[in-house]
View: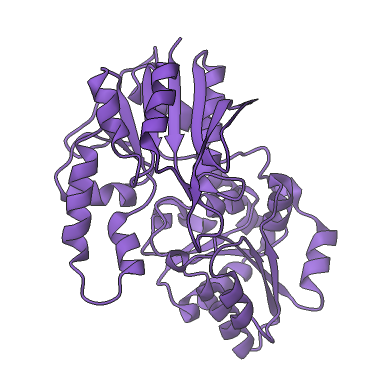
Length: 383
């Protein structure tokens, strides 16, 4: 038995992909006979036992205008916690204040993995106005980060591109998964659909953090484009974030329902399953878990072709198009025009390629804890 400790920033009650991934991995590690511990930021120090393992919360400051995210700045405190835990393996889901944990692990002979949950170059382009040398800045940051860890884990080839660009070979390709039981076509609710759709015909849904780099306004502009074509469409938005006020302003006089943060996964699944099309406009998504959850619910997806979702949305499960309202509208109409049974079946079948069990198995192989196989990193960094 090995003790696997996962440490993260930007983890909280309303955080999405990172929180889901850590909990799914933790539960999988426990099921495989290992000890799982999660170390995450919060408003105070605490410790609880969850199905994902022990969750140790370290008091951390809230990031202004982030919608509630917290970042651990007292890294010494985390190192003290880790010294007490004595992990056999370390996973870090952060590329900001926790990068030095790679050095901590190396000094103690503990194998370490850093999860690359975002593209640094994409984030910089989203937030830095003007002619900044974004690529050079990202490459420098990535070299500095990568050399601290034994392995970089990337969920998609898109996420891996910026490490390939700097010639870094110690990269494992580990696709994330989806809860195929919770997110299922049987979550469809005719009553909930009728309540949301009203007298309209086409129900669109977007499940996203409402922040600048996610480009959530594209969903509203897509709805506006559809209405200009005399399509009786309505948009339901799940999620919160710093752009929530702006999104409300943009949706004024449009048939948009802003639900904010939806607290239970079952309610999210019902909303996704009851829609006709899911919009995923984020142009720099390195995986797109909410879109995969929509596919699992049998709802096809229109996604940004510049994101990793071009690898996920394949075949008849949806379209990856330019991050442009007219192209999103074209794709949404094309999907809605297909026979409902076949489009929902195609979406579900695509999602079934991504069970969480496969993600757990791959990570155990990365950690050399899989008795059936030993991971090999090829020169391109693929596992």
